[in-house]
Length: 261
Ligand code: SF4
Ligand code: SF4
Image (cartoon, rainbow, N blue to C red; front, side):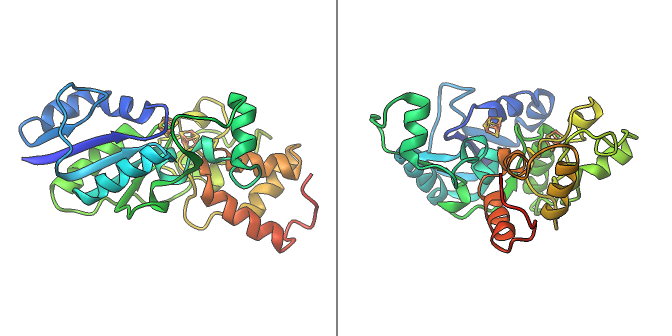
């Protein structure tokens, strides 16, 4: 029996709820896998040893760090699930702009907490991550495919093509051509493009596709009326460290030839 754990750090638990929404697939797994640890879903949990440990949420407290380090030690394979775990997520979007103290005072009015709090980090900034399944929340089909791959000893592989590709497959009219801010050209597909097909621009919740062209994306967003700063902030919403590093490189080279403002 393959031992599986589902662990939550700092996040909204939406990714774990998506796993629970895979109910038909979960029933099929019964008999092949044992969910040893899934506190959101069951009372009896053991944290002894896992063949696969799925980790949701960013590392934001001492407790998160302790849990994920312990999880890594007792797991053969560790998979980060959701954009909080993969990139730091929404809570990491201003990591490069404000201090931790400023963040805490703005949100909670105090810097005093019963646990030590740090800036939100991706799981891979603390421990080795074997695979990442991003998304806010993660795509439940991708979770099921990843489990099926891993149960068969195959490395989960999902090509990092842009969301635009999925718009073409679903014959969704391009929102960028309609002047609606959309991050599809730089965002990792696999979600089936639910936002664009509903007429809402992609917010980039799955992070970067391969070879994202941030400079061109910012130029397009500016043509649609955003300032350089707003365009950069839009790109940063879900991508945490991933976007902050790319953007600071672009701005340090003066590539956009305009002051952020
Ligand atoms: S990635 Fe999104 S859905 Fe998943 S825990 Fe983070 S905020 Fe919640
Ligand atoms: S279209 Fe964009 S924002 Fe919407 S689910 Fe897909 S990657 Fe996330």
